[in-house]
Image 1 (cartoon, rainbow, N blue to C red):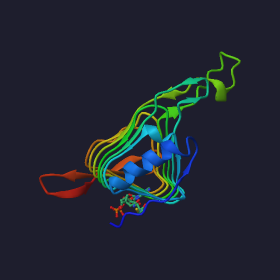
Image 2 (image 1 turned 180 degrees about the vertical axis):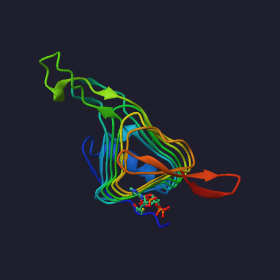
Image 3 (image 1 turned 90 degrees about the vertical axis):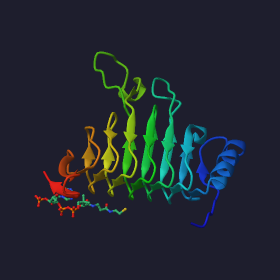
Image 4 (image 1 turned 45 degrees about the vertical axis):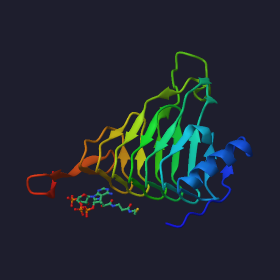
Length: 195
Ligand SMILES: CC(C)(COP(=O)(O)OP(=O)(O)OC[C@H]1O[C@@H](n2cnc3c(N)ncnc32)[C@H](O)[C@@H]1OP(=O)(O)O)[C@@H](O)C(=O)NCCC(=O)NCCS
């Protein structure tokens, strides 16, 4: 794959932080669209040959809504973040190697607090952070939403427009809202079987 690195839109430390991030990405054979948006790029860790396509947005929130957080986003070798996909993190969020994330997906690892026993508005209550993990060799269909706390095993397919609110075992195809198992890999027949 030809490596082209553009200056991407970057919210903070436009100069040194972004230059350092892009230099490493370039050395690692990554493609980062100049139309992507990276918020706190020092918390974003890319493997080799990762592609971040147009209008995608990777955001790590260190200080926001009612507190301080330790966010990260790890993306493994040869994975693709499709056009317009948003990945928001206030804690641990990892995506394996060889993962295809189609266009316009949303992956998030926190909820706003929404306790009514306090007079604090939701936007100022501490975030409830729940780690998200996506295994290796997964394919996330377009417009899928992955909610906080979800762990997706290796070799999974998430159908287009699915809402994933619960963890998914390895070698599964899930779809729908909420996402439900539609197929699983059967090692004895070496084929996907409907469930
Ligand atoms: C999940 C997917 C891969 C399954 O494909 P498939 O194996 O051909 O699926 P099938 O046609 O055998 O569907 C099995 C059942 O799941 C349902 N189903 C499939 N995809 C679904 C989806 N995204 N949402 C809800 N239901 C879905 C089918 O309607 C079918 O239901 P039925 O058994 O009641 O008839 C495919 O439907 C899909 O969503 N692909 C994503 C496409 C995409 O986003 N591409 C981006 C390119 S990077």
